[in-house]
Image (cartoon, rainbow, N blue to C red):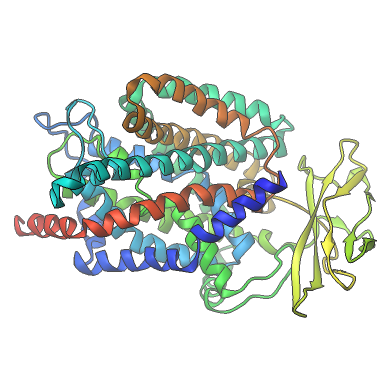
Length: 543
């Protein structure tokens, strides 16, 4: 497993290099300027378009509203609950600021990619059209030069491979893992049982195709968002006097380092930028090329109108839902909380030459207030260059609930120093958010976040299963669709069998899929950017 982690970290270091993040920002800024702030069109016209009926003489299968909710059911998922908490835990409060930046410019990115997918969608079957970046590059390249026909088809296939990787990781396994974790944490139900139940529920929905998905999403999404936001409003109302301070903290730590405190190991402005960008892009999928697949099924012959509707996604997902989560996590202080288990006078001992470990530790079972098994302490050591490094050292509470077995070793010429005044339970992702709710009203997180996690995961997985299905359809045709759906459900269940152990694992596996799709889709958007601008100008000229 260590080799897999090393490979994932290597790939993520390439996919999430600073130049990729800057490329995303520059693309969003470019389309914002080129379309004269198309975000305004989405906010002023988008909601009205949701009420417009289908164009029955146009190709398509679902309405504007069903397309938006189907796409939102993929974006408004556990990335909003667990992903935001993960960004704050790893990057600090400043990560939220960069999530907002991605949300604003992501609206322009979403507008551009949906416009292209609507222009180039495949309508050979008018009742179930197919679209997405794979069709944009396949049909668009031959327009530039007929000799590029084979190349366009090949590049479309490359995008589909990245789509399937993202489908399996972020759109499936991340969701199931979070549900398994939070259900086990609160109810003691083994995570693999939650994974199996979730996989069965997803399977029952995706058998019906995009029409069934659209019908389920149009009912499920408004309910789940309302429940979650209502719970968030209750918490924020109680902590109302802290909100100005939290906004100040978000802005200040976006541009300056923040020191280690409690469970938080400290972070630089660069870390806030990285994790904020990464989690926001994972959450709202702007520039990723996934949402255009759902929007391409809309029954309309006006691409720009659907793109205007699509621009609402990053606003609802990131500016609204993610912000509520962030303020709950920050205002309750769960992100930098004091130790959960009293200090046991832990020290590092030298096991081998320059390899330091903490020996198995005895604890009082009555000190445990959760079903979580993973714990950590914060420590500092001096690296080879003489710089002090602060990190987490993880351990596992054994089944007898009386011992902690610590993982691995720390390599250092000098003895590492324990910084924390005790041991922290490793609340990861959605579980951390649930703890934030519980810290204000005991039991609120248990029910609100657990219910929201199940609904969000279910909705995200059914929509992403459709995205992956379109990738399989492009690559292999219809004969493998049933096999794909079975494999999709199986992998969702598999994710809950305990092989992901920490926030770092979670970040690595979801970052892989998102990063691959971004790197494949951004060049397509730039190549056909003129089409987007021309279509928007024609739409505006018509009034």
